[in-house]
Length: 110
Image (tube, rainbow, N blue to C red):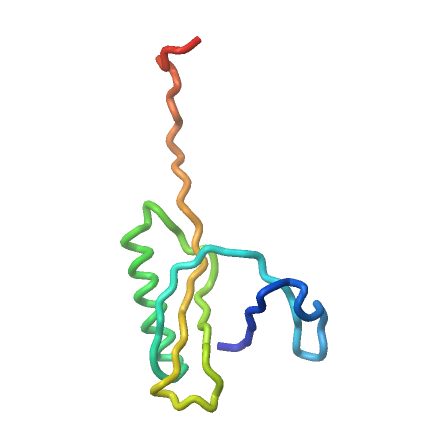
């Protein structure tokens, strides 16, 4: 957990720029598998949740593959007591593309 990101309703919000160690950038849309996490934002909760997601991906390996590293989305400020904090762990995914050839012979139309 070495970075912070914010979600805005539109790319028109803010300006793309770098100021010291802070870099403002747009991230392309992605599909993710995610799981909600209740409690303080800790490394152990992150690892437990990402483990569950990797298990789900293993169970659905014929459909999806990981397309990036897991990330932890923290929805509450540090002023919310840890037992009441809620977050989400996500792993970007892509669908698995079948490599089997499609046989169109014998379709009956010419």
